[in-house]
Every structure is written in structure tokens, then in C-alpha cells.
Image (cartoon, rainbow, N blue to C red; front, top):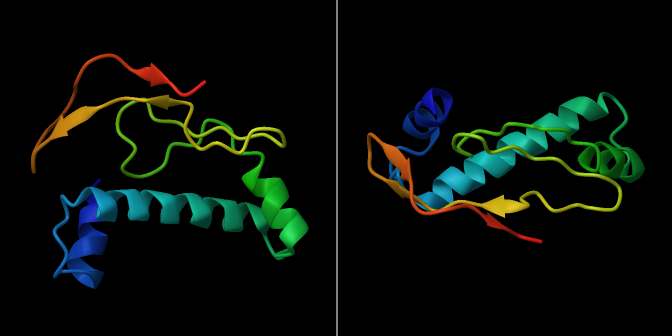
Length: 102
């Protein structure tokens, strides 16, 4: 989250860094950066889809403790479990039990 806060301060100082939409967008952007980095110089649609379909226990920014992304050629879901949290500017606590998306 240190990188996230630094990014927000530098590029989006007018946006509240605790806004869940901003946190989610940053996390998804970092996931895309990871996929494109794995593509190397081959930015064809086929290779981008191949790399996006082979994420294995990727830990993205802003996902919270234990949040990992795993995809496969038959399962493109980024999240298979959801966990509600209560967040403040300084802390984030899990609330209740996790829920499987299956």
C-alpha cells in the first residue's frame, strides 16, 4: 500500500486514497502491468490472453491479506473468494467469514 499511496499522492492528489474505487482500479492496473510484463515483446492478442490465463497466486496491490489471483485457460475469474473488510485510513479488519464465489 506504500506504492499505492505514493502513486495517489503524485498523480491523483485530488482523489481520496481511501476511495474503494481508486484502490480497486490501482490493483487491477497492477495486475495488467504484470500480464503485459509477462508478455515481453510479443503483445499479440493471443499472447496477452495466454499470459492473462496463466496467473498463478499473483498478489496484487490493494488486495488485502491473503488475496491472490489465479487464472487458467478455463477459468478467467480474478476472484474465487470474497471477504468483507472494515477499513479506515490506518487499519483494515476482516469482517465475518469469507464467501466462495463457486
